[in-house]
Length: 227
Image (cartoon, rainbow, N blue to C red):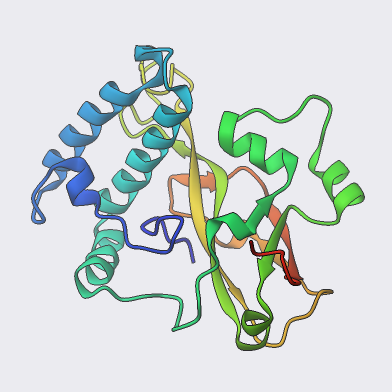
């Protein structure tokens, strides 16, 4: 299940604080805050800090998806206010131990795939899209990882109907990222691969992942690998 409200360390993001709105804000207040934030951080407003603005836009879009959908917001509020964790008590893998292939890394960062490189090339040469490094203890007990994947969503400002929309530039869809939770089962070894079918776990009705599936390799860290 996609969880767009955890940061890279597994902590719950407070979207109400980011949007500067009260906890009981209605949909109109959420939309107004979203439009103001999109205008403020849109990369076209300035060429400086492009990477930072892109990350901020992704965060804002993810927050809008969560807060604007009634069922998603109810689940999010339960997690935020109750500090519930979906990891089931398993340790959460730090971001630095999640390694993306060149293709996925470029898609996430710049939304552009390396020239002439396809996902099949990655799998043929490296065998996986993502590598997760676990400690020997995590390999025995199991763990949880939150992975960002490139996605596309219907433009929430124009809903794909305005050719002059500044947010989607008339395309009708916005490039973003969505987060999935990957459970690493107990008693894995260095030959473990996890295949995730993304077609069966779309983030929401208006968002789709850019890839149909991802293959994850589990690597058990040796001495010195975690320094």
